Length: 382
Image (cartoon, rainbow, N blue to C red; front, side, top):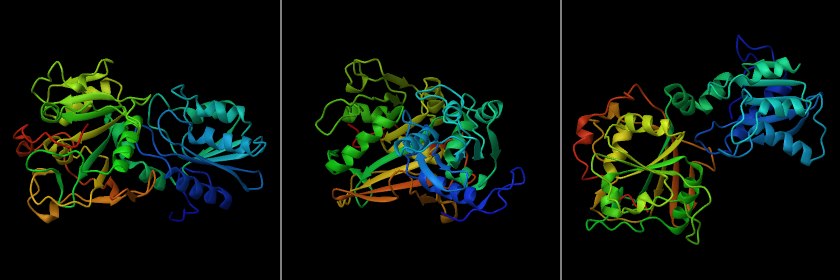
């Protein structure tokens, strides 16, 4: 983690060395959480003397927020948080979601001062600083604002655009094939990679494939445990494309958590899913859908399961992205959030990357990418 400037921001009050060190620790802790519907957030509690007492971070939607996690850690250690300072990478939330408002948790814990990096842009959650000040808590903002914005750059973009955060998942061979010539694809990935993918499905709000995938592969798109049982948390199952989804398609299920999006426009599809309440969507394919979202600049996170297998021919993971010169190539950066940029899962490598989005259009899709739904299949979705 890069060092934090002693002059954090023209809008920020001068910070102490202890607070600067705590913010560095909070930013590092935030990276332990997964990207998705909620931002990466870390929090550190300091004693009045500047000693680090407890650290917390957010582990994903539905889990304790970083502030509550730090308070719980302090209590676990028997630490009295009265009169302490909390340093946190994002303005404490002010709303009752799947967890309680962090501002109220801070007030109840007797924390006397809060130093945070950037304001929360999410309308339902914003206003925590105002609530804290009204309760007599000293509040300062702007410390390491640049680092905190970069930490969640894609999430801030998604919130501003009022669209879901988008993860794109590819399970492929070394030569970037997602199926053999005869269409077989189960299983390119190792059992460990499959289990990891199902764990991701428990965290997302919706999973999206093309109609071709449904017609050829007939996937269920459910989240399942290693023994094949349905997980308690299930994503909305979405199918994008102009062709009808058969009445007996496995993806329809019986729980009512299915939606057909009759469009080839990824922005329209995300808008519909946003209206359905989805704030984190995982796109699983096939090739046309993957390429369409990438070409449109609508992918925030890329997760690739790379199997040590060669096919030489078969279905390519991606189609034409409309790139004709190296200068226009898409560039991605390795992402250490949520467990690291590169991990070994059985015989596979799990690659985790984040967007370094350039000035590509986020609303228009090159028509050459959308030339056919025939390649929307065989992603290993199941």
